[in-house]
Length: 333
Ligand SMILES: NC(=O)c1ccc[n+]([C@@H]2O[C@H](COP(=O)([O-])OP(=O)(O)OC[C@H]3O[C@@H](n4cnc5c(N)ncnc54)[C@H](OP(=O)(O)O)[C@@H]3O)[C@@H](O)[C@H]2O)c1
Image (cartoon, rainbow, N blue to C red; front, side, top):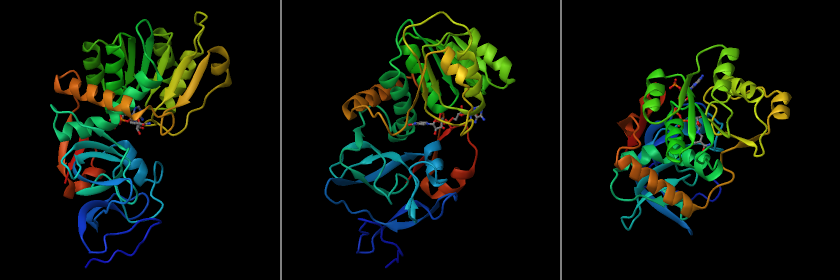
């Protein structure tokens, strides 16, 4: 029988000694190691999910780095979501497994209200790849941003998985969409997909602020970057613009370009900016989220949304974790 030298609050390891293979975090800031972990056992209001695919996302790295849903005790299985089967065969996309379990394992433990159905027509790997960026994009552009025809939407970080889907959803809602990012190949592609203007980020602050201001004014900003690009956006928003009744909604979703950005008081005084963070708060109803996820998967099935995906065996998680890839890695147990 394998020995596991830990008992967490409320966590009952399978006393039979059964285990699953998993990507196990052993310390803050270290990549996970593939190895055995006690098999999950469902308690009241929980279900064991047999995992078939789990994407590797920025939030998983943030979790392992001690930033986002960080483990309070080790060992702990990495992975904040995934796709798999319930015992009755139902295919689900699960969210935030119950610690110390995670998505990157053969089986995991999930609260019964924390999954979405996966409709037919799309494979498990694609469903797992689209889960986090698709839902974040929907929440930002549709549920919280309420992008609409006649509005101008700026997506900062539109070359990433989340930003690309956000730009697509905003175009689909007939907004005028302006995107900013580093990867010119992706920016050019987005222009062919109905985006009105694409702004390369790799330029000095003032020049970037000018370029962003020239394509405004904006009704909604979806920011996946923060850091220096956000500072240029603040400068652009503070430029003289026609008087407006509704506030400019600035939704901070990610911080790929920096954890900090300096926000001048005059930005908030000159422009009616409403700055909101999009994370664990303000969650839309699960039924709405389920409909939105089904819709995003439907768009993937008919080719409207596509992500470059690299499918990797879970046993290679350590290497995949540290290797730089411009594709969304999906781990398969
Ligand atoms: N709140 C939520 O629920 C939620 C959900 C999903 C994502 N997020 C956050 O949103 C951010 C993006 O996520 P993602 O899924 O799109 O990740 P991703 O697919 O890995 O893309 C990361 C993006 O950030 C860009 N980037 C990285 N460093 C940069 C820098 N120094 N300057 C400018 N651009 C930079 C990359 O540009 P290149 O292609 O040029 O490298 C790429 O476009 C992350 O911070 C993530 O944690 C939050």
